Image (cartoon, rainbow, N blue to C red; front, side, top):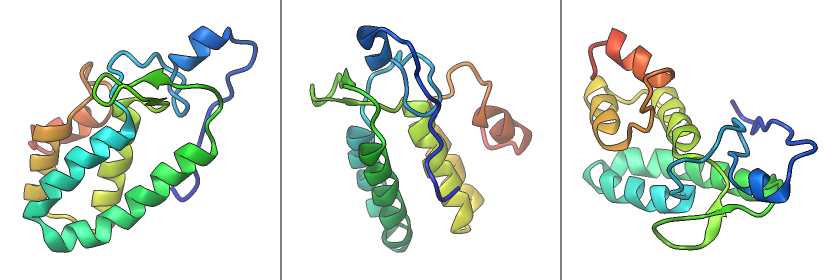
Length: 136
């Protein structure tokens, strides 16, 4: 997953468009921007300095791709109050999980990640996989 897959938002009202995720086109119901989530991720990774060194460049590249591919003005983030919640927390954390797996993170790290950053509230995405593995 080296490129950012974004779904086109054709013929949408600009107000509606700003409240949809640029990746999955679902409504952003928990508007925490990926930059604020990234700060939380970095805080968690202070426990794992070697993992941090390997993971953060990948996440920074993803954040740059989000910025480069922004389709419209974004939803205001409830934490930083900037209009940069263009990607829902689920899509951001799904990408982090993908990268954690790619760098061979341990099951313990993956389980801890799920405990702190699970935005799959409806258990229709990556939570199903975690449940099958007994991680959550």
